[in-house]
Image (cartoon, rainbow, N blue to C red; front, side):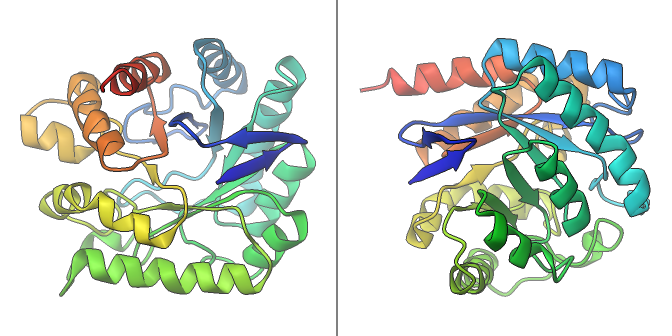
Length: 273
């Protein structure tokens, strides 16, 4: 599959890296480090210089139990960072991490190239029509409920089968609207227990049946640091280990906090015979 961004054709013939830029005061790992627009710009600059293919800018924390924030507050967090990054790095491919169509629309107007939606269109009825109109790549993630309720919604009869069915329905809706560049994200940590996250990772190859690029976001998540009995700050080594497995099982995009290390992981994986 190819993804059209800003007039260029970005081929997913080999894995890509999406750098995470959380412009929130309460993200699970960054812990508000990049809430200040200047600090966010400097972090984005580092990711660009290290070789990130995308920078994913988000102003709404989706960690379990995170408080809801208004649309206006989300816009206030996201737009200055998108605008500043593109002013300094006009060729950067900026993703906006939002489930709100207004935030997505204004970020796209500011120059963002793709949209990353944790609700796959369920969070705002206007999101999919917007994507269809703008014809930008769209990341659709699986989760149940909201960040405020998802930890209580982890009961599945067939974890992987139900997630595949979810994406089949979402992709069908998107395709009927004329959206062709869809990327699927299984949603590690979203309405899934630690054990379910590992089961999902072990079954990644089954997602090839969807015939859409696969994004994997396990960077420094609790499935790593709770298993190892460490903190998220100490979870880089574990993240790299799981990235190698994800690549071997079909991941096309790694969504990461640590761009340099993820790119090194990809280089080593590609060197395998």
